[in-house]
Image 1 (spheres, rainbow, N blue to C red):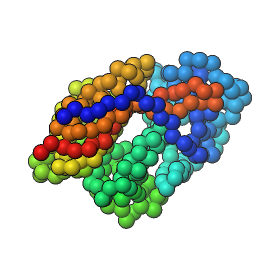
Image 2 (spheres, rainbow, N blue to C red):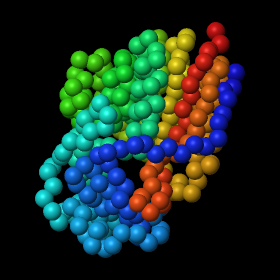
Image 3 (spheres, helix red, strand yellow):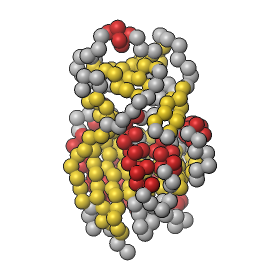
Amino acid sequence: MHGKSGALETFTPIWTDYELLDSGGGRKLERFGPVTLVRPEPQATWQPSLSEESWNAAHGCFVQASSARRGEWKFSKPVPPRWTLRRKNLAFWVEPTPSGQLGVFPDQASHWDWLADLVEAQTPPKILCLFGYTALATLAAAAAGAHITHVDASRKAIKWARENQSLSQLSEKPIRWIVDDAQSFVAREARRSRTYDGLILDPPRFGRGPKGEVWKLEDSLPALLGQCHNLLSPAPLFVLLNSYTTVLTRGQTAKEVTQLRSFLKEMLADCSSTITVGELGFADSAGRRISQSVFARAQIQSRSS
């Protein structure tokens, strides 16, 4: 059975510790707790609304990589190597990294809320989180009562994730931490006949596994979803598929979500499900919206035997 599909929805989570203060001129001005930072933002082709003094008052900025230099952070005010952010029942470390990221994608909080609500209404489900990064989706689901297997190819990301687990006081929650290539892990789980009630997939556009395995979203994702179908329990609850927008995908939101919806429909052909598609992001103080990712998530009502 094919799932029902809704129209594109736009989500902006409520935050206290994060704020998109302004954007424009190819940059964005953000507040992460007590620290304000400037980072590149190709979507922001308009003029900033705040004064240049406001931008210059930021603690630091990330200078994007070019053919002549690597990307780097430049700080004009003292900033700790890492500091703590909070949202609802989660606490986690943020840290300026060489890529310009900080260990958290604030737009993803919409997914954390959705997962927590879904898990709380169920008998403790078993969930597999692939490309789990610093584990904020994992921790949101674990705090709500889920048993999680969290997979990421980066040892550093897994270490950071476990530190977030401790900081959130969730160390007693049942989370299995796995450093592995997502495709290799899923293939092994299928051979072991292990199943899960929910799947979270947050893949990059491009990446490499710990043994050099190449991941390219357009080529690799359909095959991975086909393998993931074999891991669904007889009464699965959901599949969440998130994809980050890039310079190459700006302005193609409709095409992107149509593709993700199609991937889920094919994967869940034997399920009755409701598929929601949308984009995640924030609006700045002048109301200009920066889109960060697109998603398709399916709530599954039943599965054919």
